[in-house]
Image 1: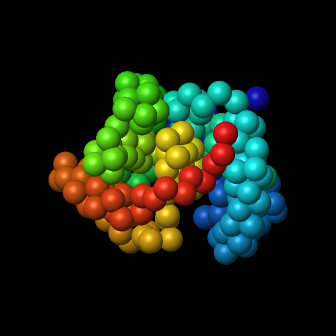
Image 2 (image 1 turned 180 degrees about the vertical axis):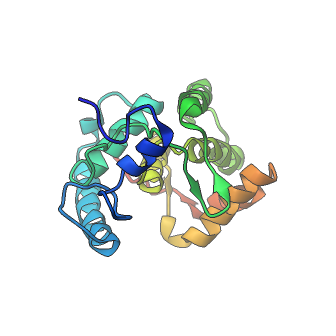
Image 3 (image 1 turned 135 degrees about the horizontal axis):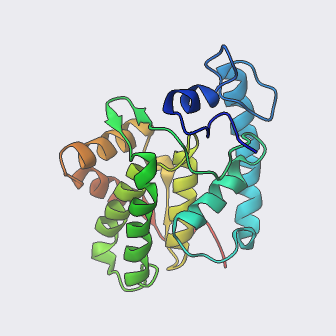
Length: 212
């Protein structure tokens, strides 16, 4: 079945993500305002995160590639969006930062997966080099930005899962969206990951979010 956001025409696809005549994304919860959708999304996704942390096996094999990130997104947003877990069909941006074109998303995430494989799911990364490595991987995953909505939460769980492999975690309460988005923008626009490295140095801890 052809979805209205996957017709092959960029303008049609862009409009197809929205309820016709509105700026509200099509959704499963019957929300017809941005505020109502946001409230429902927050509650439903939080419940699915709790479920996932109790049963990480729901995702299948921990391959740390695009397929795995899609499985995370589908788990989190299955109650909210018809396209949960599907790679976006349109370009997207946040503020003055543009993300990877749809046709190159696989390439960016393949690089992330290869780097993770090369360091044996971070096992061979030193404590001193961990923040730098996570900053590098996060920069690429953020640039890939595979989904129409919900990239931030899916990506956070991706890295929480990855770090749990070595008994580490991320205390996201020690940062905020302004710091994160600013550091991500600088990493892309100026090829300067120092902000991301500083942020991850601050929020890395020894409390994994997942137990396997």
